Image (cartoon, rainbow, N blue to C red; front, side, top):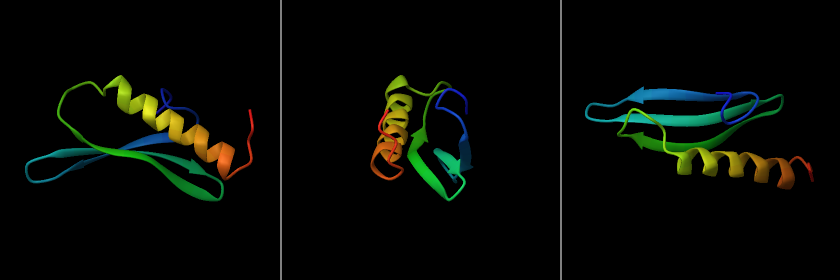
Length: 68
């Protein structure tokens, strides 16, 4: 999912009555879950995408030592 960054993907899961979206990034040594939310509209809210981007940046900074 390029809108979130490199190696980011979206997994769509349909439940009986709901649809879920799971955003994640695949790194060489880990899979980082960036967010999970219930899909209620056609378009993903900017707040959700912003939160996922911030989590990816925080992971890079805190875990990977990327201090950009």
